Length: 354
Image (cartoon, rainbow, N blue to C red; front, side, top):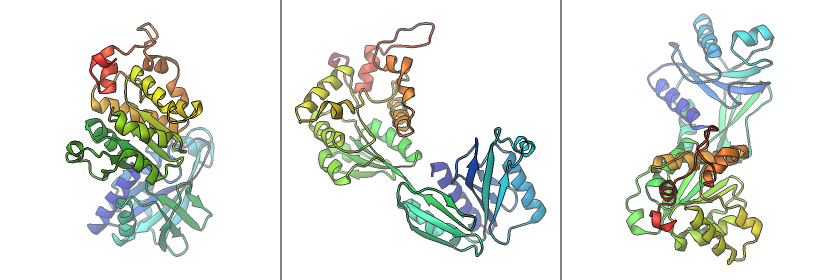
């Protein structure tokens, strides 16, 4: 589930609180190419207002027309779009694309209150809808669970499936925390330094004051965990990175120049990490986008985390990789190098540190 879908639920809940009737539309199955994956949500208000998306717009228009022709639904139903080539073209579905949707009528805010309470608590939950009765129930879900639909029961998983630990509570961490929250990560920020801890202001990101290596050990990183060291302080970063690199975390990165990251790797080898474990460390962290400000650097780090999560490692190759390593030259290919100043900004250091 992505953050857009949480916004859909919040808006639908608000509409219901103002005595509107709402139809909650869920993508349950797709075949071939599809604009939106299973689990995507759209809320349709009784006066035709829409929030969310299940297609490029044509299916939304048809759903509005259907509601105006037929009126509010009495119970949930399943509809299919794109059965034939002509219908697929009509609704803007790619060649061979077919999509099944479940339409669920909602009449009161209570229909979504418990679900939203769970999401505000960052819980991962499964919502089950029985199409015959219209009854729903909530239960705990596992991170690997997905949308299932057998024609009678729709189970949709809501809540964050991934988590990220940010070591350091500075301006860069604040920018990255906000982006990660928008990407539906559970965010934990660790910084034992009082001067940084006291100034933290990002809502919905948990802040802890323990030593970073203790936090890594306590959170038991798994294959859905990312860990990023952002303090540029070996006393805080190194032991935490050692624990992270020994874990199944899918992403472990650290900010710093190439020179500082090589020194960090040499220190990590002294902790009895093998070459394969040390090689997992990503640094300088982030995809090369010529970033300079904390917000831009946060975008580059978030982009690399998402690329690794999605298995899109090709994004870190070619001219992007060359730029990141400072080996590219400004040429007709459009590749660019990092200047010493840019690298220093990425490292959070003075140019004299390079």
